[in-house]
Length: 323
Image: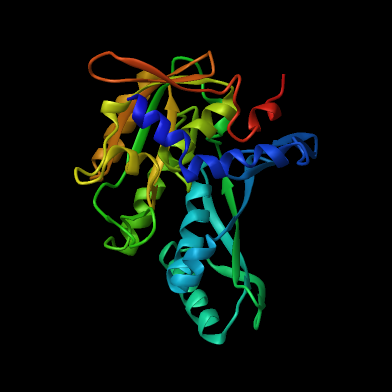
């Protein structure tokens, strides 16, 4: 367990996230719109508007992926944004893209990927900006969504169960830690699987949620707990994974479908049942604690401290939690 912990702490996924701490002090900790506070650090900004929330988010695409597979980069840019909206309990409305491209061929492949996945996830592309003949290609995509009830990273509660839901039927994209479990699904299936999250929010079955991003499962759990100023006892032997994938690789993988929920124990079976009926994997992997320490435990009841957010913030987002 100690070897696993050390390899996770020094992984590129977590080291890159820790770099955000150095710039956090230059970012606004919270903004107020029409008298309502908008916290920085969730999967999307959530702006109160009448009886709902407007959700706004943006994603920059990993440059090596854009260079090696521009079509997949375009598809991924839509997927990550859509996942952000659903993880907040919302549904997407529209996206815009900003593309700086080094060639016409690159432009065509990126836009084809964006358009194909936008159509698949039933979210229209309504504008953006394109510049060609740039020395270096870059792609950012932004999304607008809407939610009735929020699943905010700032709302995990002591005693909550931590649930991890994923689709273990898939494969890694060659050369990247991206676990593709959506390509083999129909267009209806990919949307139906995401719709379950919006339903959970509207039924009030979860306190908080976060999608599993480039930081992997373990990094995403850390970010959720840091936002809520909480810790967790995580049973590493309970984490479901594809049998052929080593645990460390899975903890750092970026899955096309992966979400974490923090919810009251009395709701755990209801939520698990919703996902399992769709053939998805959903298991309780731990319990939220109040001490801001993330501790690993295994079936032998051996315990090891993985991270103390109280002394070592991951990205610094905890400072934005209001008193």
